[in-house]
Length: 191
Image 1 (cartoon, rainbow, N blue to C red):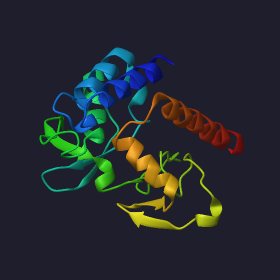
Image 2 (tube, rainbow, N blue to C red):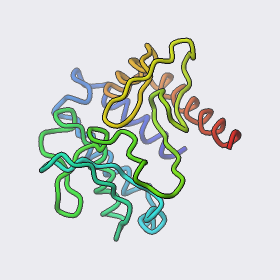
Image 3 (cartoon, one colour):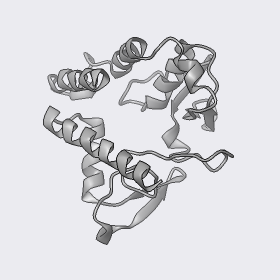
């Protein structure tokens, strides 16, 4: 609940500026770094290593890279920040992980799990062919392939994309949070 409240407060701050997250006053990655440093336990990198696979796109050659081994909390945070970086939206100079610049792995591998040998749970805020995601009206279930992943074409997903880029009201964020909780509970119940 503490993390949820921090993100809600950040969304409220972003909405105060005319340009929202595109405002020069708004530094999403700096705020995210602060939240991660504050909320992640010191041994988070040990808990995540070998279990959490973070998809990154290497800037120099556009290749997808999976980060799954971390030597420190700071290195884990660096990988997470790289995976959140959307060029222009988050700035012009991508962050680095192990001295190499990366951007969001969704550009080259939206669901890059085929190379993993272990069972994988796929999670997305957008409806598609995933384990945990919102479930929209099945009557309009046309998925398109993009960046090695699938996303359903729906009005709801278009709204989710706009919400991801420009944070909605706290009431809508609360609904999104509750929906994610329900989607996860449904997956756990079925599996």
